[in-house]
Amino acid sequence: MQFPHQPVQRLAGTDRYLVPQAVLVRAAAYLIDTFLVSFLAAPFMYGSAQRLSFTATSLTTVQVVALAGLSLYFFIWEGAVGWTPGKRLLQLKVVRMDGERCGWMRAFVRNIVRPLDLLFFGVIGVLSMASGFKRQRLGDRLAGTMVVRALPLPMVPFPYVPADQASRRCAACGALQAADRQDCIICGRPLDGSEAGPTAEPWPPDPLAALRGVRTAPASSASRLAEELHSEDDGTRLTAARETLLEGDEEDVQLLTALLGEWDEADVQFVISIARTLDGWRPKAVLGALRDDSDTDVAAAARDALLTVTERERAAQEAGGEPQADEEGLPVDGDGADDEEADPTTDERRPAR
Image (cartoon, rainbow, N blue to C red):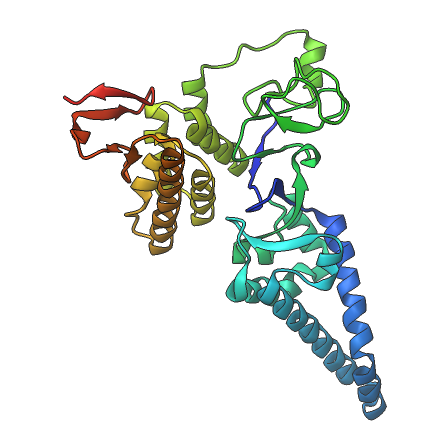
């Protein structure tokens, strides 16, 4: 049995990763914000209570006004800076699926739906968050947002893995770290036998497999990636897309490019955000195909990401004294630059046909 893995993105300019947060910590932030709003609104509510008679109608009016005021509070804070004082205190932030600040429109959508999430004492929102690894309530699903916390790599919990690098998890303490480390950064134990990214033995191990005393031979990488790219599970599909961008062969990349046209925009944007952080022919091939997508938002994001990748590689080549590359990754030296082309399966040069 393989446990699903959910790739998470690096917070720009840091070594931390944006991990979606579940019910308890978000409920604590919500209570802090509710208390703060109640404290600030107490004088107004007291004055209103003096003027209103306590009837069912007046009580309902007060409740509606209170809920509207609370939603307005969340909308202003989240639209302006992506967090509220309660979220800030607990190091939470509302972001888009690509990790950027949610903005005014998405903040409006997620907060206008808030009353639905609070139905039946919040059961609707809790069930929505528990139904996926992105921990989205209904408002988040409609707005295309997540509530995340930026965590250093060793603190990224299972089943999350970094989207921009291979990693493995220590079998002793569960800490996640870069795949090239030999010993655990937390407990110091050797990492031999630990999880080496989402293609390795799952952590924690499958207890049923241990009882059976057997191990199933893994499928070949090509067939496994193709199968996982067709998966109905978002986490499995996005993990396979990440692996394809990191180490897939030409057929895997072509399959991913073809399937992206059938995926939700949020998942496509997530793949674009992963490709933006990587170098090589694979991300450029995917981004090059998406830059002419019929969805203008996807096309614009792909063009911007492709430009970022190209400029980063060009800067690295100039710093290393290597020939510059054009937007397709081919060398530009003004001297027979078209005599060779890149072999997409080996990243080596081969004579043009």
